[in-house]
Image (tube, rainbow over all chains, first blue to last red):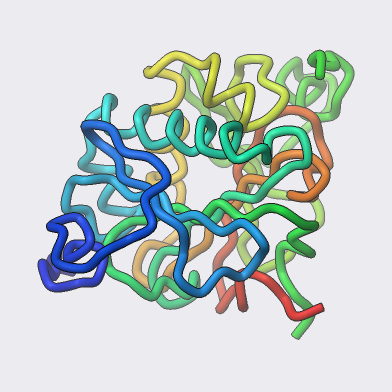
Length: 120
Length: 120
């Protein structure tokens, strides 16, 4: 899948759409989800144009990958989630339920997040 | 929290308990979950003794972090999940629902994984 430069996270990265920023460094931007699924719900994205985890894991540099993981940990600590716990989720494609075609990691916390997979 | 060298993943890493191995490299081991929550359910773990995502993100090397992310992507591709999609989950602490105190990432796929957070 080609990267769509008009996806909402690309617009946030360009500053065309505002966000409630939580963290930023050379490789990473993080902001609160506008429709939080738990009391704390943050999205962590690479600044590079990666469509999905498949794309990111194959094509990002070690520095970009390390920056994203370290940022997720730091943000959780800074938000006070390290003690109480949190869940990281990255959705890829249709079976994963990925909605925005720019790789992103959800940090979910502030309450028990629930079972990993709900009974269907 | 101190690392418990008797946790089940430490025993798997030492070869004291068998696993259905999917992938291995210098930094990473991956194997099928013995109680799969979706048709495909793989656990990806660092070989280093990291209790949690908090520990791993703060203390692992860039090479270890990149290896884990790249391995998760490669495993998903090799299992045929890249096209259909998948979900990566890392649980940290109590609110995340972490059960084994050795950092691990779940790869869930083979069917639609469902909503990220179930209604309670």
